[in-house]
Length: 131
Image (cartoon, rainbow, N blue to C red):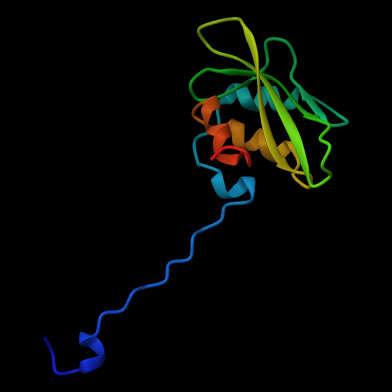
């Protein structure tokens, strides 16, 4: 113990929890796959939908293929539902994964997040409903 009384007293630090609201807060830095550069060049950007060309899909780092990213109507105007159609690398069965995001979010941010993701399960990080 030292003679300074202020230093001897115990104090509890107030830690402020970090709120990660934006998609870019969850972004991980991984190398860009060469096939994703080709997929992004041949994609179709329509109103509320990103569709990839046949045999030129967006690939995650575990070889999962993304076929389509689209917005779905949500009754609340503050949020929107984003549907991601994908197929696992082991099967040809196309599945849909839905997440809830803010209405101001852009689909290209979700695409960039998926481009650097390891697996489709990482979409839970940016889902507002998942706890």
